[in-house]
Length: 287
Picture (cartoon, rainbow, N blue to C red):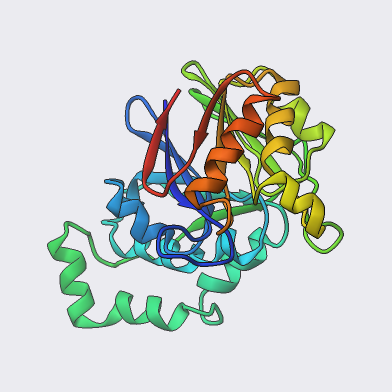
């Protein structure tokens, strides 16, 4: 099992990172996506992945840096299909279902004009047929579900379990996710402050991708420690859960600088005795 880090940043864009998105690759070519932040579809292709190979997408929450590429991913996956792919399944806290239906619903979806044109225009029909599609071309069918903490989705090879993440309530429902399979376990904290539900979810996990906005000392001084983790908060949470490998994601502009990263490593090592990885976009991390 390995995790492709497509987005390792925050809502603040930089030349090297922007937003959150991850794809877990299991043996046998099965892929599970968590969050779909800025340019996730483009980054996916740069990482050697392909949209039609991803059948499951799980959202942690609906801040734009975690979901803004959803329209692009849905439409690209459908446009590049030949009609033989599995239906895409999307899970997340509300308004996941409303967002998906609002994008692609027949007649009144925001992108129905595009879908309708590609179904009916002769040039689009020709492209569809040349790729191996059989007429008539179907509209996209996406199975979306709003879920709450404690929800579990299971296949014959892996299981995803959700827990409450302490971040933007009461304005947004927020989740963390854990993927378990015979190949290992990975936790995606989403954006969260240290909290018991995430600690319990991450218990004895092989790897945890934890948001880490900035140096903890700076966050404590400027008040930005509210509703999110910094360096030592992430380290303490991983240590309390017995996580074997801590991957720091959602890195802010200051923490992305080399001197801040060096301090961050030292501070985390003082409170966490597992492996530490500061992520970069397009990095692949194996269990």
